[in-house]
Length: 220
Length: 103
Image (cartoon, rainbow over all chains, first blue to last red; front, side, top):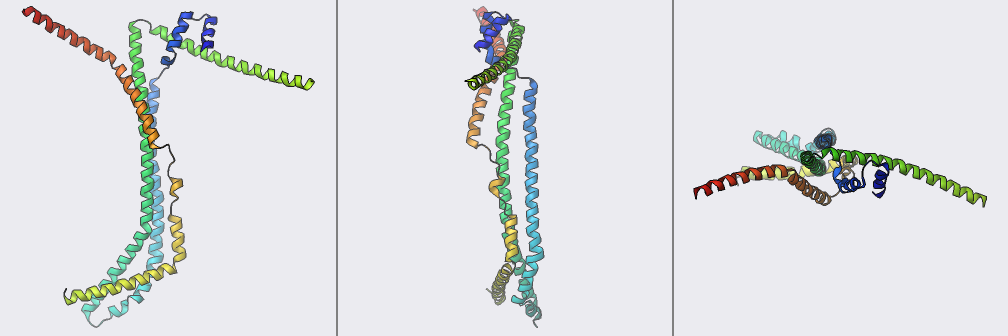
């Protein structure tokens, strides 16, 4: 900061009094264009879109896993189970009973129990997949809610800075000193650019000194 | 319980036991495929969950930002408040003058 003031003094851009003003205003002079607020708001909106897309991707992935499990159940497990249950459940015997009422009861119960067993297996295979999907979706929802809430706070804050700036502008305009603040800001930007140039020059000089020191050591 | 209901209950219990055995045998017969399926459909939850900063830290930071935003908002409303204050003061002044004139 001292260097900047000295630099401004040397450049005779502004009086020392003004340099003091710059120091006092330094932190309050940052500009917040409306695009910053718009950008932050847009990021918030897009985060919602990414969230939905992420959810969709997870659901598609778990739908695939469910299909894999259902295919196995329909094409492998159920036919094998039915084959075994026809024998163990004595379906032929029940279906060929001489009493038609016993045939009806036996076959109906056999079918009901078979369906219950297949549903039980389906639940056993699909429940862990559904549980994982739910758990993952919850954690994604929570994470995005956190991000969106944080971004909304940042957007609101940026917007509030803009509002304060507008009030300041109006007040300065009323005092007819707004131009002065803009000049101070421009002076600071100029000083900051020059400071970067100076830093680069110092680094260069440092490099030269290092080289010389090494050469000197080499001579000794 | 009627005889018919009793018969049905017995038959169902017998069928349920037979079905359980059939399912068990099916599981044993397809054990390799079942294990492969369970492995394939088990999601590595730890690696899939997003690892973001904990909620407590976020809440603390958001609260601090909000507090600062409120201050800015209050400052930004200064002009409007002063205008309101001015209007109210004039109104009160006028009322006071009216009252004084009455004496």
